[in-house]
Image (cartoon, rainbow, N blue to C red):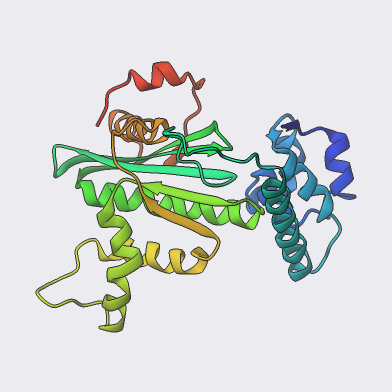
Length: 270
């Protein structure tokens, strides 16, 4: 990891107006805050890969050229990892479930069902917990709306991470949500977003997630994970759903309190 300093920023950006879209993504600064990127980025922690890419794509005007650099860098990192990987004598039963540079665990909960609903996400970089997100509170939601909302927010995060050159994996404990956007929606779209036997519930969020998933599915791995099976990321995402309900946070926001994993795991579970 590296701390963002003025020296690092000056390596990648010659003038304040010179910063490009991908560099903002690498610094986790929104486009509308571009004019304040220096004060927002200073002091942040960046992975070595993000810091190197920030410098490599500095001053490259053509977006297609920047994307090619990111793609090549990603391929090189993968090659190095495979080259240096130790031989495995046998598979270990360790429940890490991390498959790439960034692993996103998402969950949604409702108490009762239907009732107060919320969504949560836990983001890991390598094997280290990096961020927690929560929100999308609904006073009268369902487990399915909460799960779909969490998956959609995860896809938005995954898109940013993939654009920054990271390998991304999403772990979702809702088979319903996964099937909605990766299987069933294909048929529903062909039929004009109708299905035999009645209306498609939660259609608005399903369509948004489906179109976004199709946009990034070649760069992001989406898979099912069993709920409450000992995966730390899944448990933390679950706690964030309950935190969203308790705080009644309608937006989807980053958890700003100090991250104490043991204390978080002692919070109310869904």
